[in-house]
Length: 215
Image (cartoon, rainbow, N blue to C red):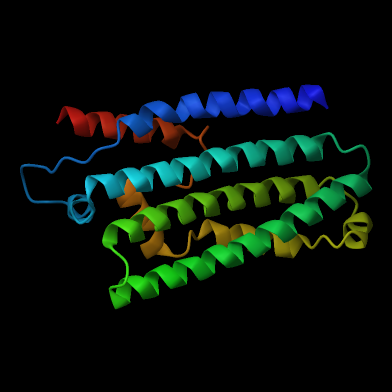
């Protein structure tokens, strides 16, 4: 138990350090030629609001990365198929509820934006955070799907695990609320938003920010 807690604590510390450099480098500088779509989107957001979007997305990614690894460890260390199936069922149920809440939140944000009751900056900041969290749900669903493959079908059924529901959850979360929503988050925070912090795109986002600062 102490070893597990220490591993999670160390994991959090490493992730915080990993995210510090690209976060500090976040800025947008317009090109001297015709403005790109990214430039236009960024210019509609105040610097402080863009920073809030980056911070919100990065925080969601850190929390998601920790939860993904904790879930993976818990499933891997389950002593019986029944215990593993129970962990899968609980995680999927929690994430289904959370994804529904995130989808509802996106609809509320879009309505508020259309009605002019929310600033562009706040809209972008909250959308980026939601998209990042959806990415984590997608990856946890992937872990659940993989783990379910090693458990007998009758055991899964007894614990209420529906593999089709897991796949549906994964696909819904993978849509990131739709193409427009995902693009909004990408333009403000970077190409890696919603991706795993260990993914190659994570380093690409940092490189893009550095290149932007050097231009």
